Length: 163
Image (cartoon, rainbow, N blue to C red; front, side, top):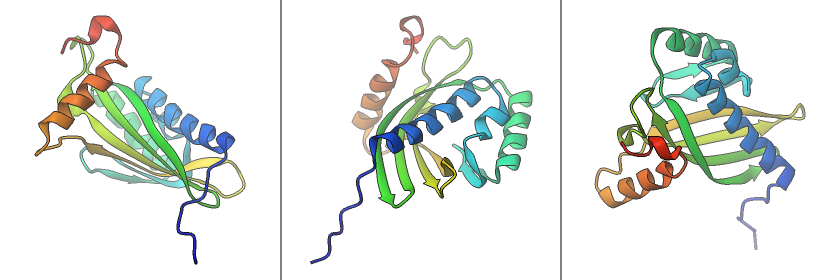
C-alpha cells in the first residue's frame, strides 16, 4: 500500500519558510521593492491581488519599486494558517492578510486576501518560487468574510481597528 500523505516539514524548515513570508510583507510595509523581492528565488514569481504576474527577482524589485513610488500603498497585517511540506525541499505556506490604508483608521475588509507561497530549498537555503495573493471575497459566504475581517482586526493596533 502506498502512503499518499505529504511529508513532515522539519520545524527549522517551517520557521525558515515563515520568515520568508514575513520578510516579503516587511518589504511591502517599508515600501521597498528590493526588500520585498529579496526572499524570492532568482526566477521566482509573484501574482498580485489584481492578477498581475511578475517573473524574476529583479523584475519584482523594479515593478514593486515603481508601484511604491507612484502609489500610497496600504500596510499589511497577516496571519500564517499553516506551513506544510510538499516534497523534499518544497513547502507551501498558507496565510490570510489584510491591508490598512494610511490615514484610514483601520482595516479595509475589501482588501482582505488569501496568500499562498511555494518555497523551495535546492541546497542554498529556502527561497520563494511563487507567491500568490487572492482576494478573499467569499461571495456566497458573507459569514466567512466577516469572520476573516474580525480575525485580521485582532492583528491591527487597537486605535486602528474601527474601519
